[in-house]
Image (cartoon, rainbow, N blue to C red; front, side, top):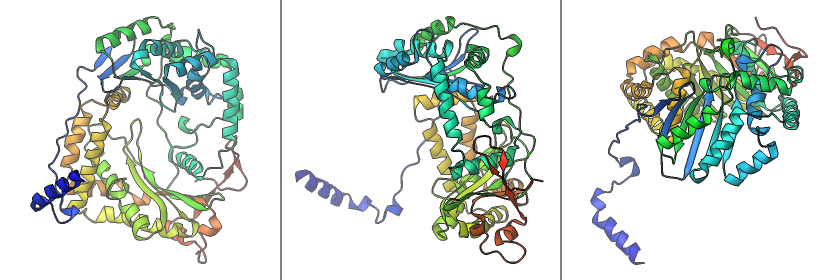
Length: 498
């Protein structure tokens, strides 16, 4: 009890400095110092670019490999080749170990090895205790350079993929994302090219071997290495590992980076996908007309607008109005993506009861209009800016993140100085800049509204001629066709997109 008494006496002695309410608490402003890329970037001759970030806090080493490889390189009729190659790199054995033996060795080391492939990039990662680094590197580079794509594991992956494809219409959010991507970027864009039983059947083990040999090469790789190691010893180990790589004569087969941008998008309108789910899911927004350069100040202004409109911080007009004030939605958010490889988009999301969709859309459109026509309150602007800067601090909170962001800069062609410009630029965003950018980039006349749910309930308040939702959007609804889960080809009744 002595410590309780001492604590109480200390509080009484210092009571003049304790504010009467937590709202009155004040803290000194912190200074954010961002790490720099200088001294972290290394190049192995004829091999990858490497970013190092030492951190001896824990006896752990993290290595991430990224490459500009993805489904944009899939040959016609073989959608899924890049994905299978990337996923089976880890799962299907290496030159000297069967798949089961490889798994056992990884488990024995207490390590984690992964590999993956997406639409525009692929990669692999290693997390290993520093005392087992040499063995971990041997496994990692055995996996990267000489995977065997063991036949039974590949067939298991094929079976599992077919099973997951059969369930593509069971998740409302998956349907919403799929149909939105088709509306925004067109069904012909590589990012929307579906894997089907036919394309999967066209891919055999040798195709994976050939794809890996053609594209998974050191000169396309960018490494982020962080953790408990000595920089010079790590570079020497990596140099030895890459010197043993079985190089292929790639010649004219080099990766065609940058991937092609989408060419078409659906016209503004109201689109509906019939699905029997308890709640309706909604996206509304539009693509941007141009890709903003990395040094374009509007990129930072759009970040601030997105935070005010529907960010995850202390303020969010969309969530505040639709969820907190009106109690209409379960979740709500907004994002304003300036884009990395092609123009991005504005997108608002919420999920609600089917009978509340029209009212929720109406309120969301009101908030868009308020953003275009009414100035932002100075305190609202300041909170948004401080939220973004606090998030930036967390983005560079660990050595793994530091090396990872600089490696990502290299992959995207983003200047390393972008982050310091971000730090300084967000703090300088003015009320005038927010107002002007909102008028330019928030374009309600260009909105695409996509609703997934039960139309009979969504349009239950319909009057003769048009439903309330149609009148709000200024468009007659276009009912998108149902899709076969395996082929994603239209089935049943639908309407063509103009």
